[in-house]
Image: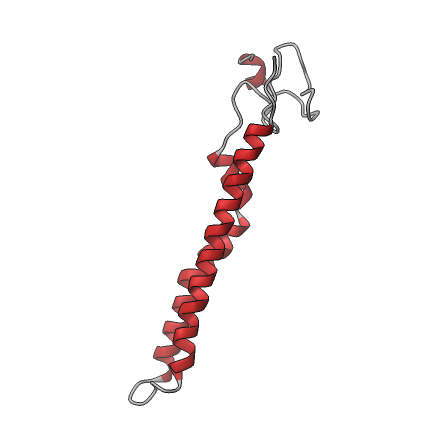
Length: 120
């Protein structure tokens, strides 16, 4: 009996949710740190160059917000890498494909040679 693709899709959904939650955490942390640097920026400029504080401001945003953007943008490919489809199933949905089938009965994706070589 072929297995349902729902466990794979559910695990991938959880992985995407976790990756995006981490991205939101990075963003919030970056905004908090940026807020702490931006407000007292004018108060602390006595005796220091203005570019030093702006450099710290920009570096803080790069350190926290840039990884958050990258993580959010690549959350789906990362989830597919973290939760791969089984070798014996459809690479799209994970549904078990028999050796004689040319198309996945669940989603219609053409069966690859690796799915035919490893029947379920």
